[in-house]
Image (cartoon, rainbow, N blue to C red; front, side):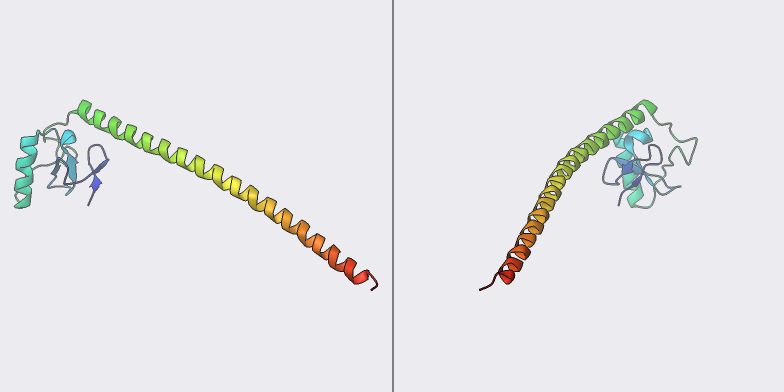
Length: 133
């Protein structure tokens, strides 16, 4: 299950390179924790045995400080990914909206043709009733 990192607030999954904070009970990205891969691996092993000791910077001011430039880069990378996804959704929505408008126009045209046909039928039926045989 994914939660928000306490440092950058973006989604983090414990399957990623991440570390568990024993105080707030949340997962933190490795890049946000300031720990290297070896430290993350060791802390994950301890966490599995319920012996973890890591406290995130939000919970423990004396914890290892985060590398803000790396954290900022991670946030920027995630924002760029989200922007690309939003643009893709906009393009899809625009195409769908255009197709929807075309279908609506066709429905209106068909309704008008049907009305004309019904009027024609009414006139034809009334003409045949008024004609002496």
